[in-house]
Length: 217
Image 1 (cartoon, rainbow, N blue to C red):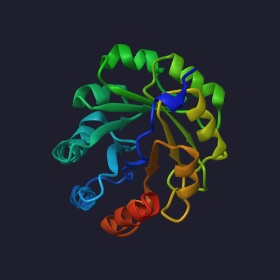
Image 2: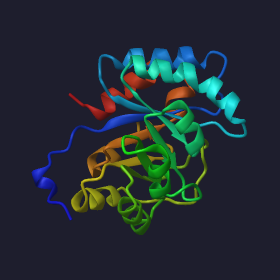
Image 3: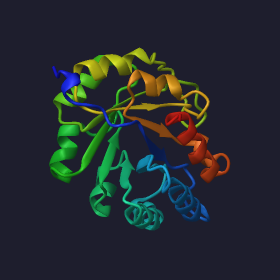
């Protein structure tokens, strides 16, 4: 158990998650979002999340996005696929409860890769992930989401509990928008994982709206 008063928290940051369609004009949209963030320094990571593609096609789509992230010093995280993360030398891997364990992923990917784990609304799963070597835990979905529907609906208090007990960073995910993010920031989320709120409209405007909501003057 950590005395968190001895470890001041850094301000909450954004963790962007890709839409399932990352071809076509999406690289330009990612570039636009990260350019808009230069003023604010909110975006710390980008998760590449695609489904139903073979590894060669996934890698083809991922590479230009990875280059954009590197140019902006944003961590590039692969969703679910440990083999793809290894192939791309990704900065991180995000694991669901049905994926490889953090311990197995660490053996495959080495000590420097950031490993995150979806823990839904479960304190037990989060503690278990930490014990197995995860670098962060993700709770959600806090709000209804069309990106990835979930029956799990934690209360913001789970973030406050986690911060009071552990040093490991926590991510809030699920239907988060500039309009509803404040309680999660206040409760102690280190990162807000966002998808639809960024990509369903003007991504640069969305970054600015999150900045106003997360860093009120």
